Amino acid sequence: MEATAATRSDRRFAKEPAMETTAPPAPRIADPAPLGLAAFALTTFVLSFFNAGLVSSTGEPIVLGLALAYGGLAQLLAGMWEFRNNNTFGATAFTSYGAFWLSFWALNQFFASKIPGNELGSAVGLYLIAWGIFTSYMFIASFRTTAAISLVFLLLAITFIVLGIGQAGGTENIIKAGGYIGIATAIAAWYASFAGVTNSTFGRTVLPVRPFTRT
Image 1 (cartoon, rainbow, N blue to C red):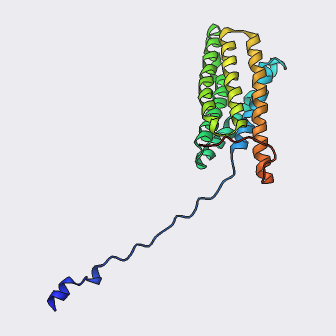
Image 2 (spheres, rainbow, N blue to C red):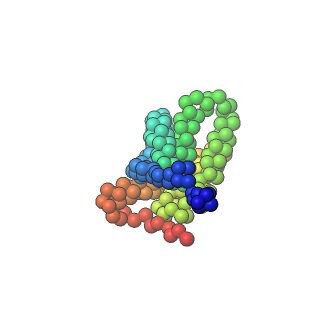
Image 3 (cartoon, rainbow, N blue to C red):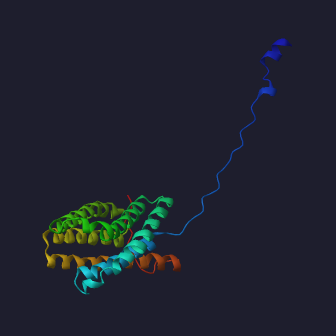
């Protein structure tokens, strides 16, 4: 009797099975990429018209409002939402280029006047070429996105580098060439944005972006 009691498990001290709790699924958010691309495209398009010499440089301050509100803040928000979507590429791209436009606004508003005139061109050239380096490796990373996005990064890398060389050397024709390439970049980004909005709204592929196959 005692032996039986010794080997019997005491139910009074047995742990109750833990109740499984499942976290509620996180609410889905809309794709922020079309917003980020549109903000980048419009701001780049307007600035590139001035760089290409297609409009008078006296109107260039109009770019600053776009750089702050649309190219800067709107794109920065798109980058934060891409973090929420677990999209490393989109988060890095939109956050970085949003910060680029904010820095462009700050440079023109507060800091350019503090750089000696004979050194301003080389300083801005370095600034643009550094962004070209960043864009070049983002172009490589874009090989697993879509052909439309990859084209945007290819054209943008060329734009930054050409503008940087033109600014550093004070060569107006090279700056104008960078402006024209920037216009092409903006059009490519607008197409990618247009495709994202339209395909999502229609629920099918209306405008192709040619996704690259992941291996």
